[in-house]
Amino acid sequence: MSDNLINIENLTFGYGKELLHKGINMEFQRGKVSAIMGGSGSGKTTILKLIGGQIQPKSGSVSIDGQVVHNQNLSGIYKLRRKMGMLFQHGALFTDLSVYENVAFPMREHTDLPENIIKDLVLMKLNAVGLRGAYKLMPTELSGGMARRVALARAIALDPDIIMYDEPFAGLDPISMAVICDLIRTLNDALGATSIIVTHDVAETFSFADYIYFVADGIVAAEGSPKQLMASKLPFVKQFIHSEKDGPVPFHVSAPSYNSDLAL
Amino acid sequence: MKILINFFEKVGYSITSRINRLGMATRLFFLIIISSGESFRRFHLTMKEIYFTGVMSLVIIIVSAFFVGMVLGLQGYYTLQKYGSSEAIGVLVALALVRELGPVVTALLFAGRAGTAITAEIGLMKATEQLSAMEMMAVNPVGRIIAPRFWAGVIAMPILASIFSMVGILGGYVVAVIVIGVDEGAFWSQMQANVDFRYDIVNGVIKSLVFGVACTIIALFEGFDAPPTAEGVSRATTRTVVTSSLVILGLDFILTSFMLGG
Image (cartoon, rainbow over the protein chains, first blue to last red):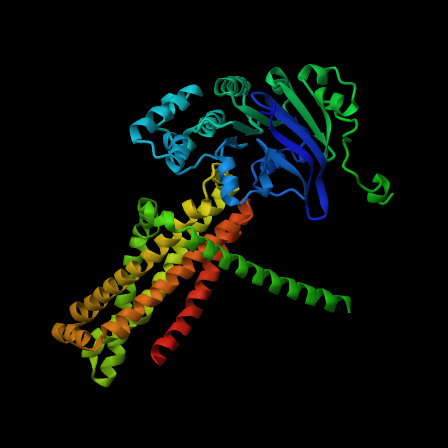
C-alpha cells in the first residue's frame, strides 16, 4: 500500500481560456494533516472540488487510492465520496433540519441502521465536537463556531478516510479557532484519517499541520513541513508568512499608469 | 453599421440563451423523472413537501376561490336575468370554475405562493452550498431535494384546483341563493344536469395536472439555475412568477382548444 492516499499529477484547470492551475503536483500522505495555503483566488478551494470530483480538470489527474477521480462514472464518484467528509466554509448545514438531523443525515442516506444506533452515533459525534447538549437546536440558533463544529460532526458521521476542510477558520473568534484547530488534529489522529485543509491562516495552520503546500500563480510555489517553510527564503513564502503588504504579490492590481487614469 | 451588428448580436444572444435555458430545464425534467424512485420509496419526503406546497397554500386558495365564486354569482346573475334564465346561474358558476377558473387561478396563485417559495429555497440552498454539501456526501440532490418537490407540486395542484372549484361554487351559492334569492333547487339541479364528469371535471383535472408539472418545473429550474447571490435568487424568484403565469395562460389556450376540438 502506497504512503500517499491522494496524488495530484500535472493538474491544469481553468474557466474558459484562463488557466487557474498550470500543472499542479501534490501528494497527500495517509494519516497526515496537510494544508493548502495561498492568497484569495489562487484556486485552493478548486483543488478540493477537483479531489471530490465536483469539477473536471483540463489535463492531469487526481487519484485516490490509485483510482483516477475524473475517470469514474457518477456511481463511481459517489462511491469515492463515501470515503470523504467535507467541511464547507460556512458549514453548509441544512437549515430545515435540526443539529441532530444534520448529523444523522449521512447515516440515514447511506446505511440501514436502526434509529437507536443512529441516535447513539449522532450523540457520540456531537460529543466529539463538544456539542452533545445542542442536538435539539436548529442551525439558525448556532453561532458561527458552533455551526462549523456541527458541520464537522456531520463530515465525520461515516468515519471517512479523507476529511477536507474549506477555510475552517474564516470569521471565527480566537477561542472557536483554537477549538477547531484542536478538533482537526484530534479527529484526524483518532479516526486515522487523512486531512486536507484549505486556508490562509498562517499561525493556526503552522501550529498543527504536518505538511503545507503554497499555491501561487497556478503552481505549487513552495512546499514542506511548517519548520522548513518558516526557514524558507523564498520571497513569496516570506511575504505570506510575515503578512508583508508588498512583495512578489503586489499591493496594486495591474492597471494602466496612474497619471493616464487621472488624465494628467 | 456597428450599431446594427451590436443589435443583432444582442438579439441572437438573447434567443440562444433562452433556447439554452429551455434545454437545461428539459434536461432537469428528465433527470427528475430518472431520479424519482426515492420520492416514492421514501414517500415521507414527498409528503413533507406536499404539506409545504399544498396545505400551506390552502388559505390563499380558499379565500380567493370564495371571492371569485361570489363575483361570478353576482356578474352571472345580472347578465342571465336579462335573458330570463337566472336559474342557470348554478351551471354558469360551476362550468366557469371547473373548466377554466379553477385550474388557471389555482395555478397562478400556486406560482405566486408555492412556486416562489420553492425557487427561493432551492436558490438559497445553492447559495449556502447545501446542495454542494449533499453532493459531497454522495447524495444526489436531484433525487433527494428536487424530485420530492416536483411530485409534491404535481400531486397538490389538482387537489388545490378541486378545492378552489368547490369553494368557488359555494361562494356563488351564497351570493345567488342566499343573498339574491335564486331558487336553491334550480341552482343545484341545473348544475347537476349540465356539468359532465368526463368533459368538464376530468378535463379540468387534466389541465391542473399539466399546470402542476409546468409551474413546479419552472420554480425548481429557476432555483437550481439561480446565480448564488442575493440578487440572483431575487431575480430567479421574479422569473418564476412571470414565466409561470405566461406558460399557464398559453398552455390553457392550447389545452382548451384541444379539449373543445376533441
